[in-house]
Image (cartoon, rainbow, N blue to C red; front, side):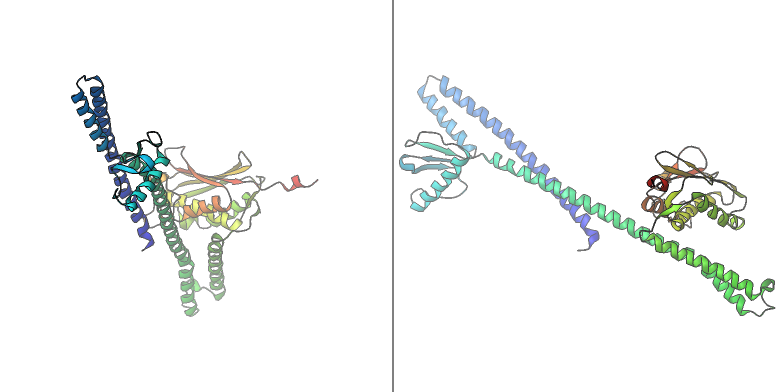
Length: 399
């Protein structure tokens, strides 16, 4: 059976068991109502036999009382002198009182009855041995049904959780593969273009580009390819964390973005305010820069075609945390997307894969043990806040 069908099979079994349980408990309730009516009739017959002065009618009442008791389906065995079985009613099996085999089987059954309910009568005289009413035996199954239902509920829950995790994982890997292809596509296309330029004669090249300039451009694309491969290599392992200067990490990101702002987003102003003396953090420079770049690119996409400002500022927060905020003046995030903005595959862009912010959360929270969230403080724009743990104070360990 395919794994994908297990949640459906377990859910079906659970519904069947639930339906059976409801029908079963309903039938028990009806049986209890019938028992209550029978007990009422027994009480009435007893009262009639006690209070009626006519011996004949009293005898009729006692006979009727005996019939009512037998109608309850309670197993009853009467034994006489020497423990011989003299009469039986409502037995769960067939036995012949006149054969030694039947007497032996009934005496064994009498022992079972006496273990559950003490017999009525004195030894050596007529004794009445009785078992549990059918309703009691049926009630015994309730605990088994409840335990089975609870077990199935747990199994269904686990199966659904595993299926959801598997679906999330598959969606994440699919989105990751698309993101990798997208990021590799730009430098590869650029390299193909430069290769075509090299194939042209010196006088046919646009702008009379020399081989040195083409080589520099190719080297830049190769560096970009190496950076991309290194990033994706690190995301699948536990990278080493070192003391980092957030001022330097953001400064390098600022230089990278400022050089590309004319192409990435015209009319967009990037403002950075990260003090040089801010407390160092414990992290991985490559992955952290990638996470910040994804958040900033999200802001660039929000401002595309309309212009605006992106502010990056950092300050020291509480509980040994350094806080970094990335704020834009764009249209903000739609309410229906806010709660799942960091999930793989979720995006507000028509052509996006929904990986950037999911990767940022994985890097910030999974690798750096920090926290990233979208603040809800303005009716317009978006503010992402990243809280990262400070690096341990080296001087504190020296004495």
